[in-house]
Image 1 (cartoon, rainbow, N blue to C red):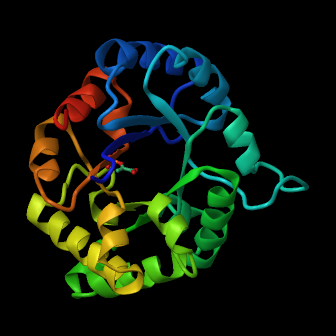
Image 2 (tube, rainbow, N blue to C red; image 1 turned 135 degrees about the vertical axis):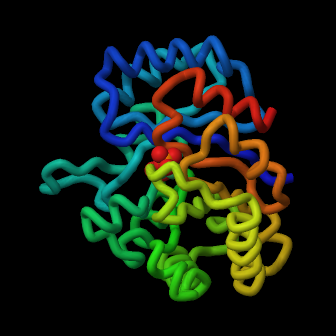
Length: 251
Ligand code: PEP
């Protein structure tokens, strides 16, 4: 059985106080849910405080980004050990905003994923095509390239621990969700790529999340698909009721 996950990416939203309010609301609604794993990824400034608030809850916490070095002169960056000791179990890597706005490459994501795994964090590796790439029939080529580069030379045991998030760029923050059929087609393709490289047993164990304008009203249709193991949620993770509705679509 693959682990199901509903993860919230708060992006650059919520002060510490606002984050605490959100997390208290979320604890009331889904604080005891263990299946799916409920994960929140606050900004770095709120990690420690949110981790403290979550001590009496099943909700887990993750980082939104990570540097691959252990420490040093990397102004503005954060290391795996810092995430771990702030209470994180997961880290989002290669989000399309990091790729587009901060020039993060597949190679960089690959180095970070290996570092996260060796430190004991679960990397959530994001891939996804732009609208132009989809409309020119290049979705599979783009996904194959991003996955090949981002997961390059990961061992079998590391692959089993890694989570993949398929997030079509045209669906992120736009209100345009991929239909369950469109999403399932790409999720099935990703699992086939994993099977070709690692064998079907390992491919069947990898959690593949969908991300892109997921809401309470469309989550159940997506989660009903065989290869969709949960969601990475942006906008709808910023209100406790909205995020809980997505979690409850899977419970
Ligand atoms: C995201 O940024 O990962 C995301 C899926 O955002 P949204 O849910 O707002 O589309």
